[in-house]
Image 1 (cartoon, rainbow over the protein chains, first blue to last red):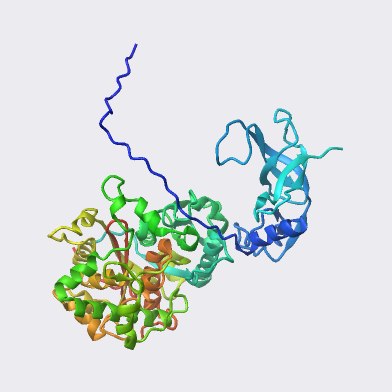
Image 2: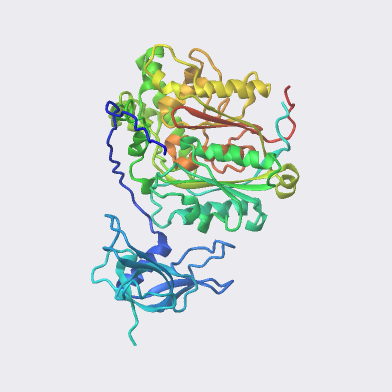
Length: 157
Length: 400
């Protein structure tokens, strides 16, 4: 059996550090319009490509494939959609929005061709599945971020 | 020295305006503006691009692997893409990479993208300072803010002459920036303000005052490179990349405070590049020099380094106006880096601006006399240099 030898590190300095870097994020006009509609009207907007007819949520200024200008074709998509994929978070950490376990999902909203990432609550993480129909539950207070949608909840028939 | 498998030309250039107010664009949107401008300039579409090279200062916007997100704006969807991040030299290193990728025969048409959003980054000095070794330097340095070159210049030429030359040099840069519609800081300074500026500009570190230091800008620069045959078909005014060199000299930082000064990375780069291309008198040979001048004191000192001058020749050039836009060797007709510094784009903008001068397409800051031979430099890290030679005509003699 191999014996692991441990080096003597008693006189080796380890310098603790902490990086605190201020940072901003410019959302741009398209991203800002999305948040404004979400915040003020509780409407989820996408942009429709006049070439390929795809509806992109979140919106973008230009199509990345052919640079067709998209942000003149705003369309409202539904507040309801379907879980396209998901994962269950089982660990806790300071940067996470909720206590584990919770569900992160890709949700394809009705009328959209691309999914957005969000939290699914109100269902046992063991029971979530691809194809689950969900609905946006809006936050009481705005943060001017995608978290103006607090989470998505299963649609109860 | 026949080092290239085939000749490479710049066939498209696109730049955003450089500014501190781009709240209306996120990163891929800002990049996309320059990408579309470069494609339009080259009269190409995305289909014509074989490969994309992308870069900026690592983590300055606190985004990990931004090249992935930025595909929304770069046009790299479905194409090979490389990311390059070599500090301040990034933009020039991307140029070297694109040149090599085309010269090697790997790709025929390569799009090079340099960008930065320093207004999103918030604190570049914090970022740069944290790169320093935690045991020896981190507590003892001030990022890119330094007065070492100013001290050496003053020591050599006296405070009065050095300070006057430096502020004259800075005002000359501002005069160029003021006529460049893409430049960030355009103060409209006059030479009569020199006395006042030397006293009233806020001091930063030692002799370095705010007016001497570069800006923190947002912006993107995009260039399209093509192999000779394609370049001639694409562009009526291709600008040829004759040669480039990169030199890193880490030891210079420690030696800033030592008694004997080592040869700078700039001097080494220039000496080797000119020798292997048979350039014996760079001041005579080149018609434009776009230099990465992060501060006036650095920039003024580096004239001597890059042009292989001796004594006070560089100070005299400043004093005599030889580096003005209508002088013997126009330096930074764009206004240079003290006027605009979107770091990841900055070193590429030096090459792009030099190329535009060779094409005659620089705009209001076009040099009036004919521009046939261009020099552009990148600077970064702890004394890194990239130096690029551009030619209007494909007629140079290879040197063995």
